[in-house]
Length: 589
Image 1 (cartoon, helix red, strand yellow):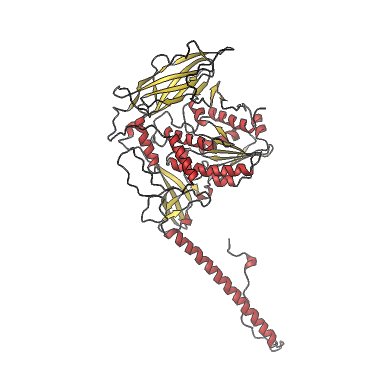
Image 2 (spheres, one colour; image 1 turned 135 degrees about the horizontal axis):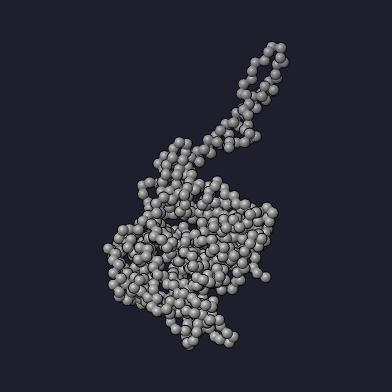
């Protein structure tokens, strides 16, 4: 587009008067003077326009020069760290926090603090590492004796041993517990308590009658936790992010990230002016920072060879722990007047459970089953639903469009991974959108024009009682320091507060993290580990607790289900998640 529109360009006036034929009337001096004045005025106007344009171009050039020829204040600080592989070396400087935010951050960090475990000096040996195969669990008797009843609390004692067969004398193992009945398609997550002496308790609610099987899994031994903590806490370098810069026939690619180590190479600063979210790229040698056209990820950095032994599937990672004695209980219906047996009232109960493949909530809300297209479309009629997050949120809009023939899904630029997606049903007046959450993103090539931060998108929503906002934000952040995740959630939460202040009837739904570690060997076991996901899941819940938002407990919905864990939960689990979402939008009367 031209800098000036056609009606802004002032035509130049002639600054000389052509000779007239002798027959023509001679102009009076006053008229000639008037013509000359107009000519000079036209020339002056043209000169001013030219000078203004030149100054404008110069200013743009100078701003570009100032911003991109200097190296911005490095977001990294060089801090000499200990050679101890378990030490944390966080040298990424984030935006300053207020005193209240600092207090909250410290409280959050204390809430997820993992038990201290002895450091493992290289080379790593399995001798002292927790061994699931040699460990065991036992089902404790029902308090007060008698048969197990629906509503009772079942307790399991877990004892951990190392590869030499010696009992462990400290805690810190990452364990998962599940009670299930495959025939009934029933399942509930257990709450694990670390006694810090090599023993653990797993506590289960007994929500259904019949036989129930206890399943305990060692996800990561305590010896692996320091390596996981160091991997995400030392620096955000689990993957390589890049951007392509292009101008004419010249193309260059450079490394990008939330934080880049300072070098002699200048950096392009793409920090978002509204949210303060950081992003930097090394400046290409022969191109402007404005020439950046895309974002993409390349290498997922592998586990170091000396640490690899701690992340062997089926050996030290995702291994079932056998029972010492029966691994199942038979539960009978509770008769009127019978009391439930509870071993520990301080342990929080589960968020819900599956029975006959359907999720029932225990958090106070009733989950209605939306089993056909008619029920779903009736609930979403005249609704606007905005979904923001990662590919686990994208699954939801894809599920809805697959269930509703009238909900036509449109993908801008055919960007399969990141959106934006728009799903429309004109007849029912249903409008559903999806957009990914902005950098950092571990995805193939994406145009930078489609990278948006959730907080900015929320600020553009009017809201109201027919508006639903869905947020899921965790999977791409598991390789970044936990403080960075806290800062990002703070930014999103502020935007949610602003949205609810201007439109209190807006429904805001938060999707928590889910288990993502597939049961098969993974070439990137740290990046796809569930331990960083667990930490971020706890942070996410805590930071939105007490607000007028609704939670979809994806963590327990994947722990409790009999299907194999996957970053992208299988369709039966997605169906149950959608039922929870729709029950929040259209609660049972």
